[in-house]
Length: 168
Image 1: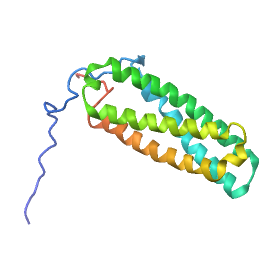
Image 2: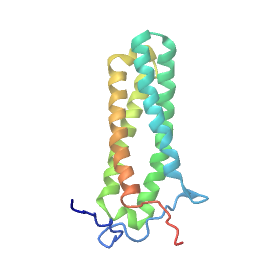
Image 3: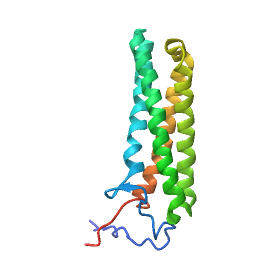
């Protein structure tokens, strides 16, 4: 029986393009605003898809109204998250110097476009807008949530963007 031990994962970040100033500059009491805001459009995109599926299943106009409100608030909160994220991207040199944050920004802007189109589609006739295009945009929105979230998570977990590490 051989003893195989894996080498510990190196914490050397000398080749990481993000080494340097990547702390959040848009924050309240040390908490990045963008990180706090992105949870709302994520939840509201999921809720819009849920409302669409329940409307498809039940034909209850209540779920059409829920879809209108969740898509509208998803767009509003997504816009707020986009503004704070764009400010971070442009104000923090260590963030804007690499391609990965720009990939996250493009995916997030595509998501915001889909959420806005979904809301705009529902403004005048909530029930007629759901099938098929509202449901299609809700599914597409969820796909873009996954894509933008994956890129954003990569920035936080792999590159420690916006993470303050204690020197202790």
